[in-house]
Image 1 (cartoon, rainbow, N blue to C red):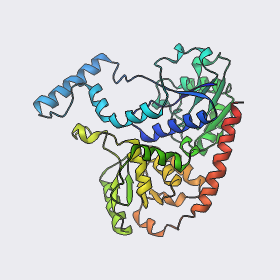
Image 2: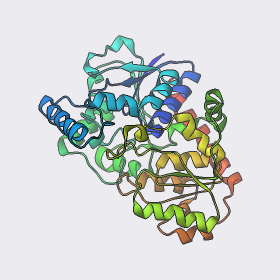
Image 3: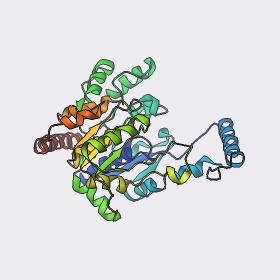
Image 4: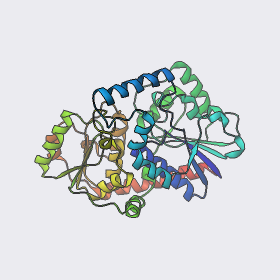
Amino acid sequence: MKIGIITLPLRINIGGLLQAYALQTVLQRHGDNVVVFDSAIELNPNLLLKGIKILVRLFRRYFLRRKDIPIFAEYEYKVISQNTRLFIDKYIHRYEVNDYHKLHAEDFDVLVVGSDQIWRPSFVSHVEDTFFEFAQDWNIKRIAYAPSFGVDEWEYSDEQTENCSRLIKKFDLITVREDSAVALCDKHFGIKAKHVLDPTMLLNKEDYINIVLEAKTAPNSGDMLVYLLDIDQKYTGFVEEVRELMHYDPFFVNAKVADKSLPLAERVQVSVDQWLRGFMDAKFVLTDSFHACVFSIIFNVPFAVVPNEGGGNARIYSLLKMFELEYCFIEEVSKIADFPIVNWERVNIVYADKRVECLSLLYNSLK
């Protein structure tokens, strides 16, 4: 069967890239021909706004003497994404599409939406596309595997709710990534969705270790992986407190991609294999990232997760609840000292059972 996957654009979000790779891989192992839809880079279609930004860049480059600042944002993106683009080119079967209405029904047997925050309307230009509005008359299977609303509050307009409620009733399988999303689907769409694992958890640790080994990635120096998306003074202090409390040697695996005050060379996103290597080397993980929590569980590394006000904590708490690891969510460093020893045997049993259940759901929906 020919399967097309709709997910968020393949850019520099490492968790997003790995979930796309994982979903593609498990479908390929089922024997299917799989592509992941991705849009071309269109950083700023508004010509007036683009012109203003170029002028700002010119001022910063020549009047503020910031020679590292590129005039054109396209070049900036190419530099920042140089490592993640290598992963995309090697591991993901990318299918470029800028207008879903130009796709042809005869080219696909199945459309899949998922995972990541693909059902969050502020993250996509036309959320109805992620419910296959463009294919509403096609004779195909429609599957939602672990899409996320990102938050536990309803962000759809009345029109979006009406449209998506009609479209979702055509689906053959509806699953979601968070338990809060089950409730949202019931309340606003009138449908019963199933709570499933993030696609990255459908693969096993060895699948990810193989990516690291293929890249011959050097080990990190240190034993506490720090991956904080929301790096500010508060969390910088957290790192130091944890280091003193637990006697760990921290190492970081994320660049300050969005910090435009830094030289461009310091904003280059780390490679996917380097990010994965961090979980192989760590004895402890400190993070505010959903996918860093996921990979801590996959690699059986104890971890603590701090709130990320901009990222939506509902999805993290839902994951922790599934494995009875709610105590890992902290707001005070001192609580880490009271963490129980993780019963990884029990966690792995829950994980294995849930993985079998989710793969069965997905594969049976393709019959």
